Image (cartoon, rainbow, N blue to C red; front, side):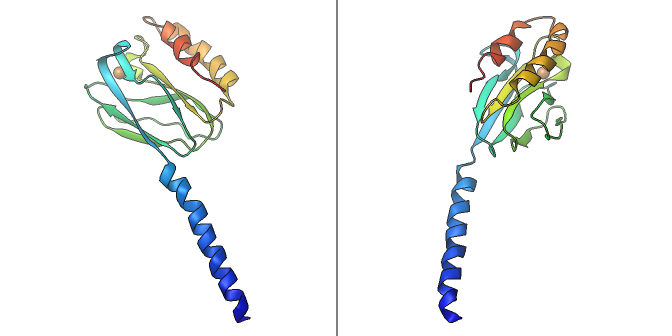
Length: 152
Ligand SMILES: [Cu+2]
């Protein structure tokens, strides 16, 4: 029996080292919520972000009056919504496209898109986005601009 122990130990070590890089490589991204930024007034910066599955994104309110709420996400994602003026971190556990908004500034198209891994749900997100589009009174073209940056 004893000759199996080294094998078991080796398997345990292999399992540990195999899992470790996944944790170590999960990136932490930051998206700022701004009254004015590179893309004009009332913006998320960056408004489009590509991540890997398991990465985290922290939304940081650098000006007051903003918060973030998911609008369209991959299937199985619990909708998220932050408190106003508070940093908010979300872990992107499902592959696909995430469309999110700042509800108080929806009219000004304060919206953003995250692509996590492959854009498996792009059609569904685009369909839902079409219903959002009439609510974007100013700068509504941001919706198409950001979604057009989604790649395979
Ligand atoms: Cu806002």
